[in-house]
Length: 277
Image 1 (cartoon, rainbow, N blue to C red):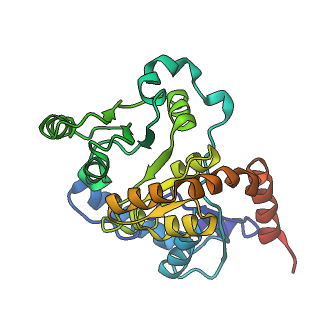
Image 2 (cartoon, rainbow, N blue to C red):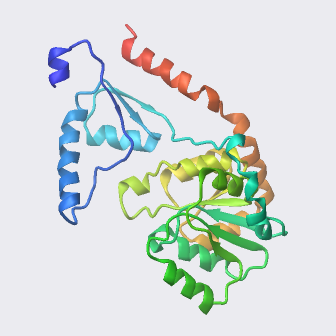
């Protein structure tokens, strides 16, 4: 309001990174953040243009904030470029990628609410599959190790945090990639804006996804993967028609003008904010 009052010609753009409109208060920290959310709700109403990470988030936010302004849905696309593919990691992963198994990779770490153990159950001891898990172990490594030992699983491996270059090499060689967000946790999870899903597709790697509206839209639009709340069913569906999904994932890059996205966004901002029509 101060800006609008003293600088009335100034245009305000709200770029929403997270959809924190249903935050649950569980302690002092979340109580403070909830207050910030309420303050932000009032502040957002002053904006001239609203940017959201996907169409679903934009529609929900427009209603929640009661916005009269226009919005731009700018998908959270990430791309791993060739110079970020760490070929120096060949020796580390040759025991995985040098065999004839389909390698499924997951960068969500080890956690029950991130679907890791469902994935393990979906692939364990399948001699056609290998699951490689990266990311934080969220204090679940002992449980992970217990499952591996108790079920005598020999086709699942956890590699911890990896660098951008290492992740690039993993994705370059993956057969399929998992994107999992538990839709019951929050609206931010349900209407996820997954950069890793796009990283996979730009590498020509088909997706195995949880059932979240943006992921369903992505997979249906480009026929590039399978969404199912049951990871066992999702993995089976992808494998049953793998060549079809692989072909469509390989075609994804040719359908997206990635390098021109920022210039096009700048042009859209200028048109929406300063057009006299």
